[in-house]
Amino acid sequence: MTRNTDAIETRGLTKRFGTEIAVDELDLTVEHGTVYGFLGPNGAGKTTTMRMLTSLTQPTDGEAWIDENPVSDRDAIRASIGYLPEEPPVFDELTGREQLEYFGRLRDLPAAELETRIVDWLNRFDLTDDADKRIDDYSKGMRQKIGLIQALLHEPDIVFLDEPTSGLDPRAARTVLDVIADLTDHGHTVFLSTHILSVVEELADVVGVLYEGDLVTEGSPAALTARMEAEEGTTLEDVFLSVTAERGPAAPESVVENAGDASDRQDGRVEDR
Ligand SMILES: Nc1ncnc2c1ncn2[C@@H]1O[C@H](COP(=O)(O)OP(=O)(O)OP(=O)(O)O)[C@@H](O)[C@H]1O
Image 1 (spheres, rainbow, N blue to C red):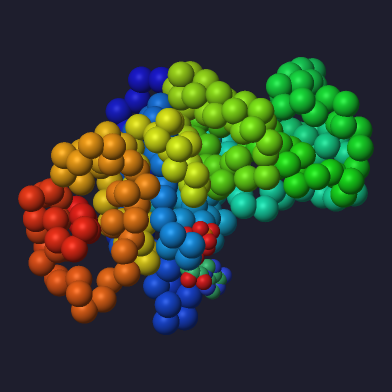
Image 2 (cartoon, rainbow, N blue to C red):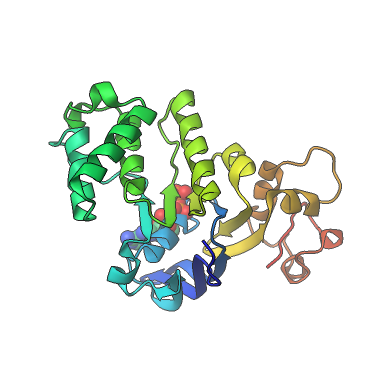
């Protein structure tokens, strides 16, 4: 893929629910063919951001583009994106295979091609033997696998994954990580939200940490850990705990103002925005 535009761009993207600000003037740029690891504590605004980027909820303010198309233009971005939300959107009364066939038809995939892809994906996720069972008889992990296949079936340029390894056994989780690596090898972009930091450490080109709707730090995993001063063995978990530490009276404004410079680190906190 040789395009000059970014896969995802947001400027001042904001979502309010009543008086609560879930996402606060978010500026993000995600390049094509990369994995963006989107971290943050519970309630930080990650899902809300992904729902705005996939056109499932409208921003209160600001703008966002997928591959140069504004997210408000749902038809324009539909073919380019795949989304695995926290709860996979599946019909309990269908079998796994029927669910994927239904979804593939919605995406206008030619019948023969659709069948080939379904067989391949079911096989890859070890679901072939259960493909003709109703989804309401599936385990959480099996539903998750169907949701993930559904997000990838139409081979979208940009994939949004919310906790993709949730409920998966170690072998299936490894398959997911391999799939994500394959996607970027083929020029696709992955926007990945997870609480499993080892996944991000392994896969992400860039990590952004959201805290109370603000992007409090961003960089490659190596750069973020290096920024925590030259402490041997600093992990992404240390960075996460540092930048998402409760903001209270003991956290002076200057920490935020001087952000980005490890020498300005105070109270064990590092912020670059
Ligand atoms: N539909 C809604 N109505 C009201 N408030 C909402 C709604 N959706 C989200 N929120 C609020 O917005 C904030 C961000 O929620 P969001 O689900 O985006 O967080 P998250 O980072 O995805 O959290 P988690 O890691 O727990 O999934 C929270 O305070 C949440 O209560």
